[in-house]
Amino acid sequence: MKLKIKYFFVAFLILLSVNSFAQSHQKSKKKQDIPVTRILFVFDASQSMYARWQSDIKINIARKLLSNLLDSLRNVDNLELALRVYGHQHLYPPQVCNDTKLEVPFAKNNSDRIKHRLKSIKPRGTTPIAFALGKAGGDFTPRPNCRNIIVLITDGIEECNGDPCAVSNDLQKRGIVLKPFIIGIGRNFKDVFDCVGTYFDASSEEQFSNALDVVISQALNSTSCQINLLDESRKPTETNVNMTFYDNFSGLEKHNFMHTMNSKGLPDTLVIDPLLAYDIVVHTVPPVFADSVRLNPGKHTVVPISAPQGFLQLKIDGTLNSLKNLQCIVRKSNDMKTLNVQGFINKDKYICGLYDIEVLSLPRIYINDVEISQSKTTIVEIPMPGIAVIKKSTKGYGSLYHVSENKLNWIYNFQSSNPYQENLILQPGTYKVVFRSKYTDRSFYTIEKTFTVTSGKTTNLKLFSN
Image (cartoon, rainbow, N blue to C red; front, side, top):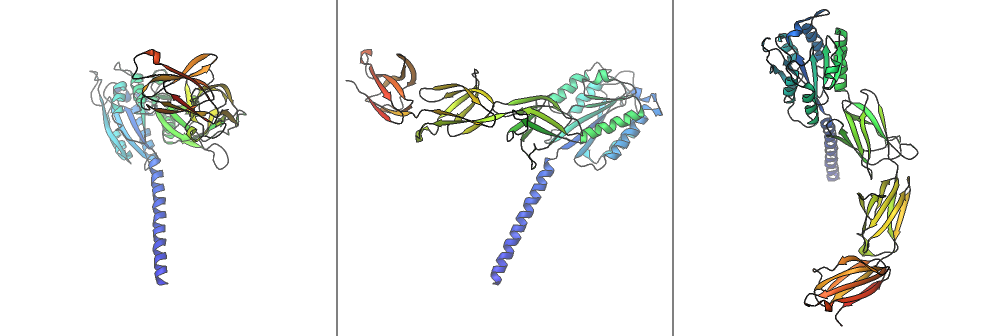
């Protein structure tokens, strides 16, 4: 009895440890799935930041408001910050157009380091925005599951003949950063910076503070959305299909979600980055698309996509084990592009519409304008084929033809790998074999034989010289 209790106790401990490990693994996996957000502040310290603006000079106001923001970001999970400054190392004149430096590299909980460095920054030089953005791209070391964001704070425009728009476009297309944020201090530079990223006008201290808050809110907060796959009644009943989200700007793949209905029978809620516009591909057959989908940060967005579907099932009138691998090509009506190769044992789903089917039998069977209807199964049935056993007395050269309307339609060439017998599954009908031995040197010795294949039966044919 004591031995049984001991074994029970050991088993209980093992079960408890396995369960604990599974829970720990799930928690660890969830933690790993949360992306790290890296925000790089690109800070203008050009000579013009000494100009008077409202309650103080620009550099002091910018330091104070950015420092206040940094205090609010202290100890935020999955966040790393960095500071790059331009226009602070060389006096103007002369104009030095490579004047930028990463003053504080990315790290966790480094708000105090950035605040301390900001205090010692003194405006000196010019405004090489394009050069600074280009260098900023190198500040984001390659890392998986990471959101890279640039926040450019400037009181002026490019002064070194660079092209900030081209640099920003390149960084985004290469997937290095998301669309940058630009905060323009003192006056509105929207026309200049719209092509660089999302622009915020800070014509006053209050607007500057609000702009910083909005930028950080959008940078840190993901947004919920749901994809409604609509049937022909415009109801979101379609589901269980993969959806790929591509960055509309760069074309890079961002997410894959298998569409699911939640416990309430509604399309499941997705939480994704609102800083991108998305091109969505729903991998139905054929696929359906939704381009340039934008989410409203902080709000739930519903995206409707028309995807009405029905089923196609292929059947054979009878049973024959050798036909279990028979397949057909499915194309949209009057379109030669292959959408799917479907087996006769499958029931596959398609977008509602008309389709052409090519059965890969001997000979081929073509069935056009097959209609797939909403939530219904369309059944296409073909006749039960027969088997032709063709025996040859010698190796040789020959072909098989289907006889139709007094014409020979080629369907098959005999294989040298099967020199003496070939077993062919053929649709019911009339056929002709034309054959000549490899060892004869005159066409006169060509053998012709016509035969008939009957559904479900075996026909034996001997290709021997008379």
